[in-house]
Image (cartoon, rainbow, N blue to C red; front, side):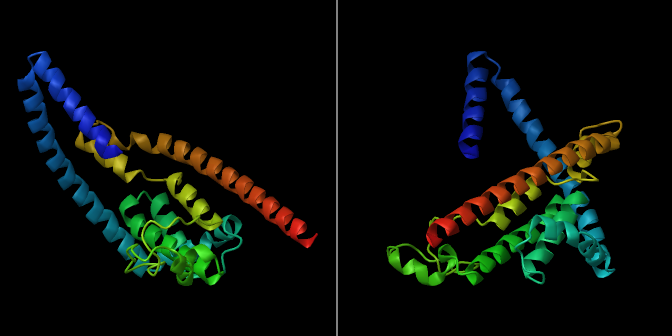
Length: 237
């Protein structure tokens, strides 16, 4: 969808430039933007290297482990059905910590690992959507996955995300950020006189979004529990 949107925008710009006789401006803008993109990539590469290095130092110094223990009560509150020592908990904690510190690039690998671990958890619980044996009823021509959780399942299989997966995704999207590294780098690249002025508004905005996400997740989680208990009562009758 995004590819189509960008293609349409580019075509509109080209056609408008041709109709108004300003194709030279369109060409110059494209070349200038290409140069700015390279400069921005170099700037962001330096920022990524710096913060990834700091994250690695914090990990080896044991700071990340201490922060993980510190947010353990919050994780138990948000993921009450998650087993205490399950690997997903460690990946979720690492993802949240990286997000709070504004390390969007560092949190992506942990986020992917967390989703994989949560998928494995669903298989351990006996969820038929995540069991390899349940794929036998599907067409044999469907290509099989070769890696990751559900690797024995064919591509395109419809699977319902678990409550933990939904909660983690919502927290990841709405995450509180104390240091918005991306925005600071962008503002610095484009000549802001005070790039760090975004910190206070960013903290306020992401704090509100995170609190909203927590309330929403707990309401939906309670609703799903009520539905499940109602289903068990009907079966008992």
